[in-house]
Image 1: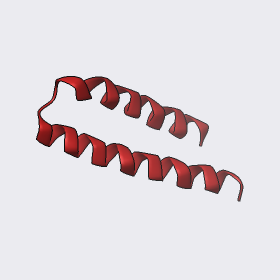
Image 2 (image 1 turned 90 degrees about the vertical axis):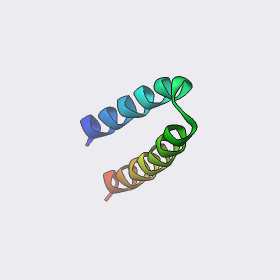
Image 3 (image 1 turned 135 degrees about the vertical axis):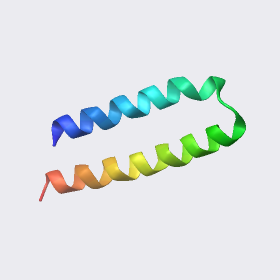
Length: 50
């Protein structure tokens, strides 16, 4: 579970670095994906304690 969390963090960091140079449509898609990734991370954190 920890490796998966680390990989998700790495994906988020790479996406945030690339947002600066993208077109507005790509920025919206990236921001939606980032929101979805954050939701997945929150759910994974809750599963750790089960």
